[in-house]
Image (cartoon, rainbow, N blue to C red; front, side, top):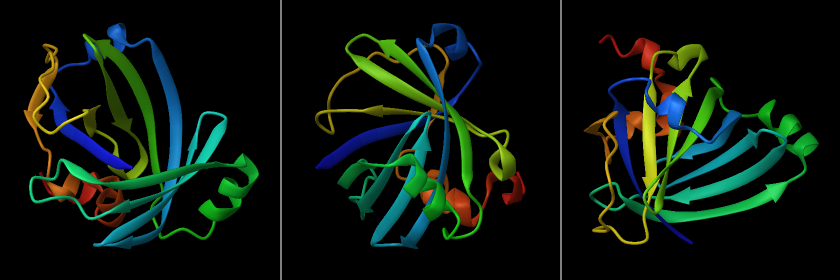
Length: 157
């Protein structure tokens, strides 16, 4: 029930040619309190409800609970979510013993591309592909819950 992950920006679109799978995701947040978030997600033809707790000080580890739900229920819940749904395509890339999930955002977050890797421990070694850029683990601006509140388009970069 603990999620350990690291996040990175992307240097190029080379990840697309390495991806073995891509899936459209639409998600919204029923709650974005700083101590917990409740997310509803449609990922391809499946749907999930997820509760996440507060991250540790490094931003690498937090409690996560997820349950698959009927897609029709998720579609209804998206209608009552907080404003600004998150829309993205997720590319999955195998690198060594790990899977990188690269999210290319659309809508209000278009232009943002972030890679995540889940680990079994905070200090686990992994191979970094050439397209992996700056680490942004722990930078709350890159949390999907925060992107729904302050979309990438409004960052003023």
